[in-house]
Amino acid sequence: MLNSGSLPPVVDHVHVCENGSQLVELLPATNDENGGVIVDLKEAMEPAAFATLLGVSLAQWKRQGKKGVWIKLPIKLANLVETAVKEGFWYHHAEPHYLMLVYWIPETTSTIPANATHKVGIGAVVLKDGKEISFLQVLVVQEKSGIFQGTGVWKIPTGVVDEGEDIFMAAVREVKEETGIDTEFSAILAFGHSHKTFFDKSDLLFLCMMRPLSYDIQKQELEIEAAQWMPFEEYAAQPFNQKHGLLKRITDICSAKLQGDYLGFSPRPTTSFFSNKSSYLYSFNTRDLN
Image (tube, rainbow, N blue to C red; front, top):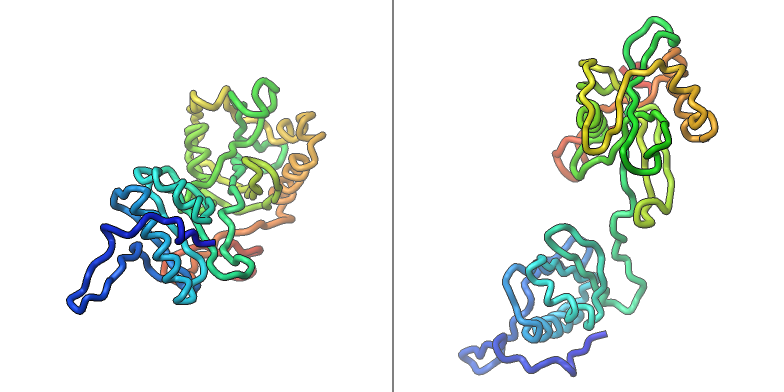
């Protein structure tokens, strides 16, 4: 609820017009497409002045029938967080250089969307060409940290997709970073969905098949203990892979792909209905679509 009655008197943000009326300054804001407003603060401000502007602004936006209020506070204005929270705002998300606070004006259930709920990762299956599965070799690593540290388990390169990065490009980048191997994306074989992982967020993992464009391994010293080409059958036969349901299924899918019984998903360039920016739709059985 608004705390306008307890706010400091307006001093520096009231302007007297020629006809004697008073014009009260509001926080700088733009309308969003969902009936709310976005406040993007950039200039330094004292908490008392901010409290005055915030109370008056909220009252005005309420009269206008606005809904959600978003306040983007750069890190240099962190001194204003407490004031906003006392007025009823709550944290929505934070980035390295700013904090986003939100407020719902109507006396109804808030429809403000939640912060990002998922982390997107990739696993890269990089296979050397071979006429038969028994001759195939897969690129594997042992990690210096994490749950596989010191276990002796050989695993495929994995990593997290960066903001603004396509899934298949993340796979190419992660393989290069961890092993020094250049690759070409072939297909998404499958994806997994799990919950309550990193900071209680959900996790999407995309399993990518890659073709090597180079073969000389140069492992990353910071995160990777060892890296090598291993016969695929030896990799699949590791006791850990056989006992772990997800890893066992991954090796089964890879085998089906290698035998031609499974195609996977391939990226097809497209554009969004909302913008002309290019994106990708991953479709199954692209061969038949072509």
